[in-house]
Image (tube, rainbow, N blue to C red; front, side):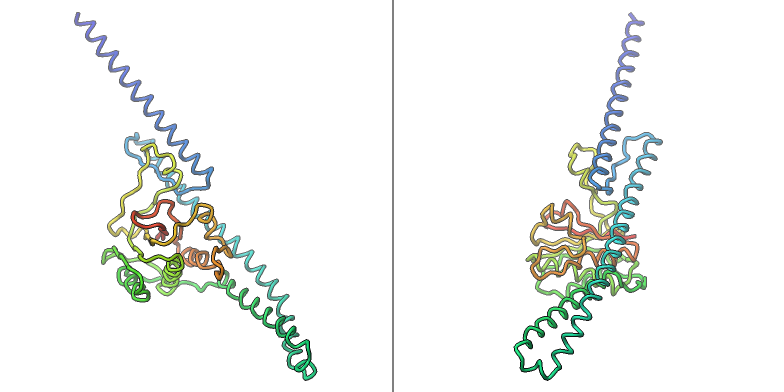
Length: 309
């Protein structure tokens, strides 16, 4: 009787071990599929938890998580450099083409035989159009002529309160610890916050939230799976790893969200399409990044993520 009990216990133990091993392998396979989907969708912000893994698997998962973040930064830098080169070429060629037109039309407008002739208004229209195009192109040179940042400690609570005073028509919810310090160029960082705030106002936002968040943040591929493996991290308490800039303006459609950081892209009738692209480049020059969170902060419609050092 006793041997039968022992055999039963042993078999039950072996069955339990095999079940756990099979379940663990299924979870690893699911993790691999999540990362494969993330890479396929060019979403390198994936970060899966390491709880429940063996020490070797944990080390491998941590390495993959870090690698995804580094790839995301490299891709963003590569895109920015490509757009900078294209912008530099385009602005140079357009300016070369418009400068003679503007110069010649101005010379003709000064001639006495043109002042009272029927050609005056036509030449003036040519001059005004070429001048407007030159001014338009000049604004894009900002994308390739950014000043070098002067890095210093910036107290983010004080900084954000200064931004809030510039736009008293908005309701500001600033949830930033008093000791949250960011190493950045304060003047350039101010331009980024102003750009984001203006975008929110143009989207008819009434409230803006500023809060820290630990990095890495969630990735769209993890959220789409919805299988319980990955959960959205809770907001941090001032680690200084990231900053969430949220507003309750119009929701950004998915097709638009994929294009908003491309220079010249805009959905506004009077927009130039350089605000967000310029803001991202400003942050990249300081070792940071700007991205749009697929899942906005609860209570808001849009959340931009400032990924800090």
